[in-house]
Image (tube, rainbow, N blue to C red; front, side, top):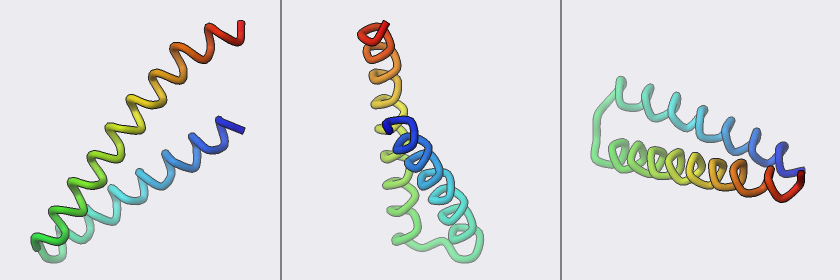
Length: 62
């Protein structure tokens, strides 16, 4: 169950990066820059969350 949620979150963040990159290529505005920053914060938060889940969760299971 957790792996499906992780895959879904990674897909969302990946598509978010593609969307923001295309938006910035078309026209750079403050809204797009703030969206890119939100995407970056989301990705970093997910990486930290997944790293903690992998390091602590796997040891508890085994």
